[in-house]
Every structure is written in structure tokens, then in C-alpha cells.
Amino acid sequence: MKIHDFKRKKDEQQKISMITCYDYPSACIVAESNIDCVLVGDSVAMAVHGHETTVTATMEMMILHTQAVARGLNQQFLISDLPFLCHKSSLSHTVENVKRLLQAGAQAVKIEGADADTCQTISHLVNAGVPVIGHIGLTPQSIHQLGGFKIQGKNQEQAEQLLQQAHQLEAAGCFALVIECVPQQLALTITESLSIPTIGIGAGFHTDGQVLVWHDMLGLQTEFNPKFVKRYLQGKELLLGALNAYAQQVQQVNFPTAEHSF
Ligand code: KIV
Image (cartoon, rainbow, N blue to C red):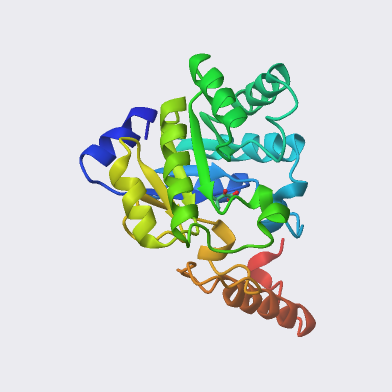
């Protein structure tokens, strides 16, 4: 998938599938799938590094994981997250951070939030030739300000604010918009009022596409169970079964056999 396919898919009413990915072997599997695009999300800090929030994601983390994923993909469009506050200190610092992500193999960056400064920064990046995807609703980098992982845009005032943010991000030049954890009716209103596609997570089925976190959709973690996650595999159970079978065979001297020996 190429950047222009995002808008084309929306115009042709074809849904866009996005998955997060953080490492080379997983990216090789995605490369053989029908998934449209891949996000090296700053959720890597939680899903892979075991942190409580995404606030701890660093540029170094994002670069390393982006490089690994880029090596495994061939067709899918690759987006990387700009981590917490990495677009806030100065424009030149932001440009340097974005350059590092693109040089690591990303084809676009995702930036959370839609305050005036962020929109101005996005506009500057887009004018400089960087594709940017916005992210509104539950923006996990603002978790301490939001007071937890909660659904956003529930009342009229918040809903109007999110709609306004969506328009500001479109005007700033975003080629698409992630909408996280909002009522599906609001996601519909936003999706219908934009010419760029919306990618939802916890935002219902009206958005132009969906994104899920790798470890959630494959059931590789079972501690975090939000309503919007669908498990397409009982990954943890399958892995546990394999690990225990191996441990048992080692204990019982059933592995290695002649087949695996020289
Ligand atoms: O970091 C991430 O994985 C994300 C997606 C959940 C949209 O931002």
C-alpha cells in the first residue's frame, strides 16, 4: 500500500486494516498477510518493554523497532509513532526526530494531539515532505492529563471539540487520522465530515479502517482486556502449551531423539 491508497480506499469505500508490529519475525509474517499498513506504535513501551504507559517510549526505542520492522516488510505502508514530547521542544528538534524515524524505515509518522502548536508543527512537516497521521480521542501520551484509559467525547462539548480537532488536523495536512476510544456515533460524524480516512480503535465500525495492537489481537497478553479488543488467536495458551511440551520432553529425555541428533 502507498500513501495515495489511503484516500483512494476511503473514496472507494474499501476499509483499511492496520496492525501494530515491533520486531523483524513478526514483520515477516505481516509481509505475507493481507494487512494494508503497519504501525510501530509507542505502545511498544507497554507491549514489549513492560512499562505501565507509553510515556516512557523513547526515540531510541522507536528507531530500533522501526528498523527491525522495516527489514521484514515489503508491501505494507510503515508508520512510526513520534514518542511523548518529541515534537514539543523546538521545530528543529522535531524535524531531527522525524528524520531519524524516516531514515529508520518509516514512510510516515503518527503524532498525538491537535493543539494549535501540534497542528502548526504537522503543517510544517507536511510542507517539508513528511506524511503525517494524526491521533485524537484517547491519546495515551496524555494519560496523566486524561486521568486514565477512558472513553473520550462522551458529552456534547467534548464531541464538538474532537470534531473540531479532526478538521484542524485535516487542514494541517494529515493524510489520515487515528481515532481512539470514542462513541461510534461520534466516529461516524467525524469520518463523514473528513475527506481523509479515519482509522479507529475502540471507535466502532464506521471508521474507514481499524487498528489493533499485535499482542492484544493475537492473545499474547491476557491481563489487559478492553471491550474493543477482539482476540483472533489464543496466542498465550498456544505458546504455553508448546513451552510446557518442550520442558516435559527435556525432563523425560524424549527430546532430542535420533532425528535431532548428529
Ligand atoms: O501506539 C499505538 O500502538 C497506537 C495505536 C493503538 C493506535 O497508537
